[in-house]
Length: 407
Image (cartoon, rainbow, N blue to C red; front, side):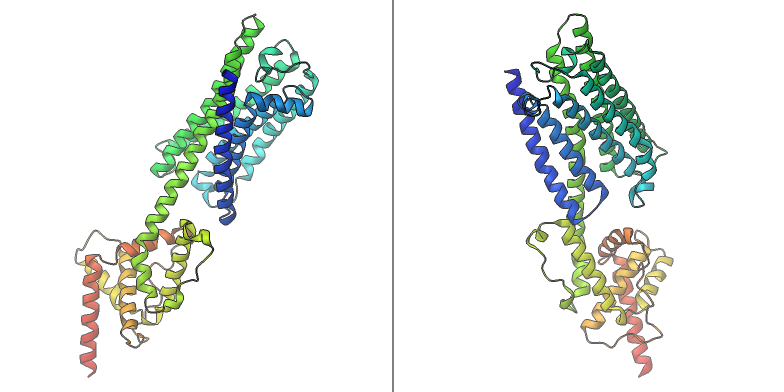
């Protein structure tokens, strides 16, 4: 009954992990971000642990390959790599690595430990040469008197403890008051990651207790069989936090897409041909693609309005700021006023701005590419701000006065 329950739980969890992993892998193909690739890979590894940890699959692997308890070697190898994913993710979360070069120094520093541990476990497993009937998930207590099996688990425990400790310390550094500024969602994800990798030490405790008990004649088989669940739970918590973080990013993309709609309508109204042709069928529900398309169309629309961009609205916003208007972003307000003024001028058939008043560049056009989305969202939020509306009134009044003066 216990084995049947473990099998049902393992197969169900593996199916869920593999399904989500495929979704993340497809997302990583559309946007080759390192975090997406790591998330997909981590989910595949977690699914593999769930699958191999089911008693039926555990026994089948040994039977098919003619190597009893081969699944134990595979579970430990994949489990160590799962913690390695969490370790690398914690490195990437640091702002110093967020958009720069991959942290090759960190990878090269830890690669010997991972590679050496996997190689040592494989050699020790081969030297142990377990034979006879392999009871699922009981490799450690059944062969506790074998020096090779004892060394096999000792090597794994030491490597796992080193990686878990390094990952938890890095997570603590990220959460420290003097550490980098993280979003609330990311801070929560880092805390959950620290908890997840900490659960791997529970696996060590369970297996070690079962081995000590078996060496003294006390069988704790249930504890040994349940030990893999702690590793599975670790992967579940870590991947849940990653998926939840991805869903939070998706919700933010949807909100930004909707917030940008008035700005998008403002800049493309005069030239509907700027709207990109519909993409593939999945592009309609992919918020990242929809948001990227909207940002491209806004940039193109703003560029098409450049001949009508007068410096008058931006100057009016600056004058109002000096008069004491508060509660707005100066650059975003200037950009919003400039675009509204230019769209109105072009829409009403007025001639482009003359060289004396033509704006050289839209305010905020020099923001870094990584900050462009946030800047445009801020511009969209300023379209109906009182200071922008007042600046437009002043700019139009100045234009009317200049027209009367010329006549």
